[in-house]
Every structure is written in C-alpha cells, then in structure tokens.
Image (cartoon, rainbow, N blue to C red; front, side, top):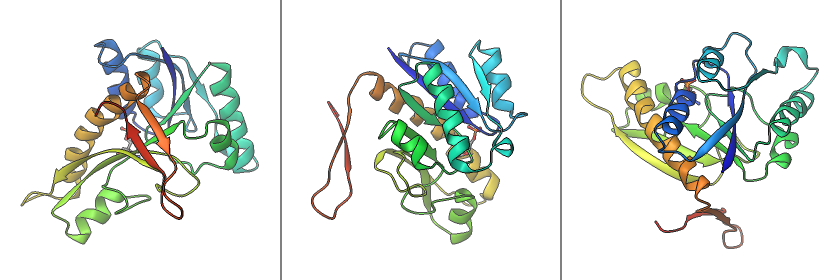
Amino acid sequence: MITLGVLVSGTGTNLQAIVDAIASHALDARIGVVVSNVPEAGALKRARDAGVKTVVVDHAQYSDRRAFDAAVVEALRAHGVDLVVLAGFMRLLTDVLLDAYPMRIVNVHPALLPAFPGLHAQKKAFDYGVRVSGCTVHLVDAGTDTGPIVAQTAVPVLEGDDEESLRLRILKEEHALLPRVLQWFAEGRVTVEPGPPGKRARVRIAGS
Ligand code: GRF
C-alpha cells in the first residue's frame, strides 16, 4: 500500500477528500503524515480529527527555501512517505524536495493548465471571460504548475457566475479528481515517459 505525505497550508478540503476516499475504500492508501507550513491551518484539525499524524514546519523559522524543504523532506522520510501530495500548499518547491521525490509529487491546480498557472487561477479565468475552466492534477517539476499533466476535469462557467461560485464548482471537481488520480498511483498504473526530443514528458495511465 502506498503511503501519502500531504502538504497543506490552508483549509484542507482536498485533504478531507483524500481522508474520505480512504475511509470509503475508494482509495487504497494511507496518509503517513500531513505537513503544514502554517501553524494555524484548518487542514491540521482535519488531519487530527482523522487520526492522521501532523507536523508543522513553519517557513518563517527557516533562513531560506532550501532549508525549509530539507525539514519537510525529513518529516516525509520519517513517516515512510512514497508519494507527496500538494493539497493547497502555498510554497514554491526547491530542488531539495524535487530531488528527494522525483516525479513523485502531485499537485492539484484550480484551472485547466497550461491556462492560468500560479495564484488566483479561478479569478484569472473568470476575469478573462472563459466559458470553460476546470482543474488539473499534475506532477510537479521545477516550474510553477508546469509539470506533466496526469488528469483534468472541465468545469463550465455559467451565466450569473461570479468568481466565488466558479471557485466552488471547480473545488468540487478537485475533490473528485484528486483521490481518483491517487488511486491510479496506488494501483501502480501511472508512468512518466520522456517526450520526443524537445517535447514535454508525458504521463501514461495503464488500462485507461
Ligand atoms: C484548491 O483550490 C487547490 O487547487 C489550490 O488551493 C486550494 C486549496 O484548498 N491549490 P483546500 O485547502 O484543499 O481546501
């Protein structure tokens, strides 16, 4: 069984979706540890309520990003983590974390990448006036939301939407997509293949 390490900074509804998927046997995994860089993150309470180990690595206590990442890696390794999930984790990763878990870090992003990477993706999509947005689960590389895409769900923008209603419609799909993708990892179905020269690496999902 795979052991997940979930990195959080905020309310943790995606963490909750993972916890619930495990409880309902839709996801055959265990959460080894939840690591938060924010001591008061709501996600920590969700983890404790679920009986999951938590570690706070407060970024403010570290001199630079690499030292912070080294502390995160230590926590992940100490809890036997073999797949890292960024679930609303609001820190950019350095080579220290990326090299410790190469192509084993998954992020959920609230837009259809490569459109609207970075912060406030839902607002950017809404302000742009797109008719369709969505969410993306991708592997993490050194860029901001640039890693190989594993799966996406499209979400319509409806008449009468505002930024918040769109955010909530996308979030609901994040909660469905992320555990589904994690189950593919649990089943060992996800592989990353180098692309043709000069082209992006591609994710292959066996049996899909
Ligand atoms: C989600 O929209 C996620 O895509 C983004 O941050 C939000 C986190 O929400 N990266 P939560 O903490 O999982 O509720």
